[in-house]
Length: 117
Image (cartoon, rainbow, N blue to C red; front, top):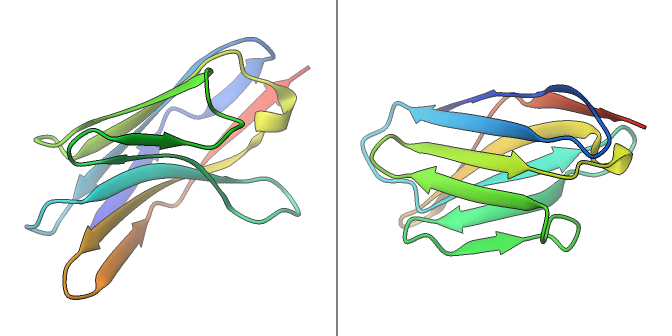
């Protein structure tokens, strides 16, 4: 499974960006899709995930500002980010999991989001 992100960029504080990720390859459905981020010098952290039935989970930092959505038929996941803050600056990674006999995990290459103050 290959994941390709798009939509990153530079935005002023208070602005919005929408990240998109499309999965290709593989024939099985993706049980969980989500977004993680990694700021310079910090560990990668969860932003939001969404299951195939639409159950969403958010990090506290994303609650009330970010909205995750997915289209199972198109194998896409999106992250609408509103009221962006400088501390949201990071590389954002798309993630997908298939829960079979083992859990298979896939990552995109990442897209840079920079929020200026």
